[in-house]
Length: 396
Picture 1 (cartoon, rainbow, N blue to C red):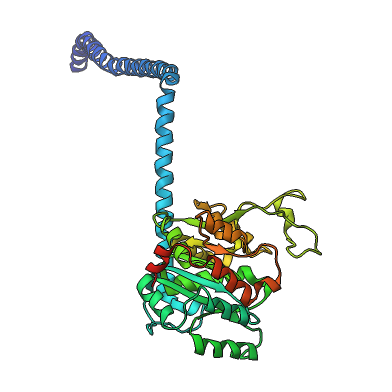
Picture 2: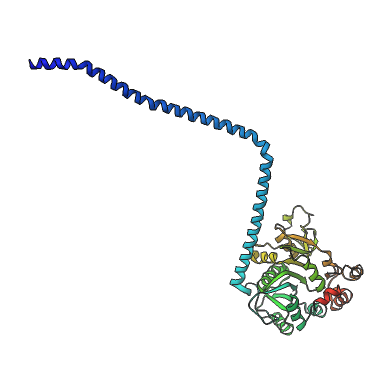
């Protein structure tokens, strides 16, 4: 009996449970459906946003040609500013490297302890210009003629350096044989005149490019000058006019002054100025790039410092003046073509003086050794040596 009663009770509750289960199922189903629907809406909205973004990009692209000119101008100005900063950074790095090199090595990198006219040996002196007169062991007569004409001697040389900041030295290296008779002769001459700058360089005609590099490196290490000048020992120099000429370019950071020329590249081996690397300059018959003639030229401190820092990797051509021009051809350098630095010997020099255009330097382009005697240079000095009296008198 009990079992039947409980069965009947269970049968009564079946519809109730069914309805209750249906309601619960509907509730659960509706809640599960809502997120799915919201996800679809989110996806649809995201897709719509992407389409709007694509359309806006397309519109912006269509508008770009209108604004292209302004954008290019802005890019150009930015590029110029970056270039200017790069140049300033490069110059600061070069000056820093030069200062570090000078502090660490002093004069020992390029020269021996050559005599200092003032008796001071350590700190670098601030001067206006350093003139290095390129000379050789066999050129004693030329040196004497220079001393008797345009280069002061003894106390006057000391005075010129201290009061006017003009340093003049004969620059020469050493012979291939240690302590040879040639070296001893220069040592004796130096003891007498005290006007040499001895270089760590083995003398030789085909080593002029190397000698030039060492001269500038040595001079930069020893003197802090505005200009560094290289002169041959058969050139007459008017110091007053040279000083006034260089002073006009004092504000320029990188300046290269001389008589600019562009001679032919000589490929024949039997000529004096044969260029073994002629093929680098193009077809046969081509000319060199513009460069100052080697008899005399001047460079500013930044360029001399550049040579000093990069000395090991600067390429040397057969001709020294070509080598120097090659070192500057790819730099931001002002090339000053000053024809007063290459006057001929009389009567051309007389004509220059009459015209009021006083020569900075005088030499004969064509003559040989007989024209380079003491008497010849004295004659040039007597005709052209006084120069601008006001400038010249200011030196003494």
